[in-house]
Structures are given as structure tokens and as C-alpha cells.
View 1: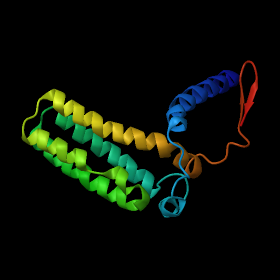
View 2 (view 1 turned 120 degrees about the vertical axis):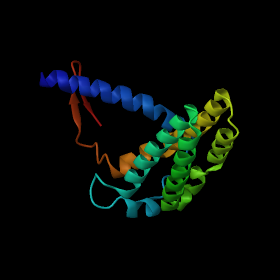
View 3 (view 1 turned 90 degrees about the vertical axis):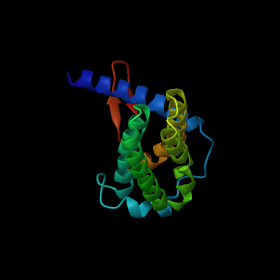
Length: 168
């Protein structure tokens, strides 16, 4: 059972990491992540990092905002968009080098579309624009951040499969 579990773990790790990381590897090459700006937000172990928690909250607020925008709930959308804007500004200020990635222009567009009772196609297009912005930044930087601050070294990792032993 253990060999099957390890085999499955190896397969899933390879499948998920390979598929997800392909976008990151295809992204424009960058000199790296702003370590000096990130280090203060990743003190104290693998859980509870201020930047990670800020990004998780940002994701939750983005989900709430986009859901209310797409459901055509103007009152809730206004509240959720305001909350998302506040969190984007907060997280953007944590790493000044990346502040431009937290631009709120698309939130202004969403706010106007909600106020003008824009049609669903317009609102979907704007939500897609927001999602694309998040995805592009994550593809470019998230793998590097996770590798540095959360995953530790893979140097001693070994996965036994049916056909071989995988090492890193």
C-alpha cells in the first residue's frame, strides 16, 4: 500500500507541478523575486506568513467580489469591490517592487459596469481581465516564492515508482 501511495504521490506531483509550472517556465525570464522585500513577511516557519495570509485573503475577497458582480447583486458587489480594493492596496504595499501588479483600474471598470447595470457579457469580460492579471503574476512569481519560502529543499526527496526511483 505504501509503494502504491508513493507511486501515486509521485505521479500527482509530476502531473500537477509539471502542468502548473509550465506556465511559470514559459513566462518572461526575470532576475528573481525581491527577496529583501519578501523576507520580512516570511518569518517564523512555514505557516502563518504575513504575505501568504494576505494573498489568501486577497483571493477570498476576489472570489466574493467577482461572484457578486456576476450575480448582478449591485449592493453586495459595491461592498465586495471596496473590500477587494483595500486588500489589493494592502498586499501591494507589502512588496513595493510588485505594487504595479496590484493595480485597481479593473476594479474601477467593474464598479462602473455594476453602477451602469452593465450586461452580463461585459461584466464577465471584466472579471476575466482581473483573473488574467492574477494568473499572469502567479505564473511569473508564485513558483519562485513557494520554492524559496515554503517547500524547502528537494535535495533529499526520493519517490519510489513502479519503474524507478525519482530523486531531485
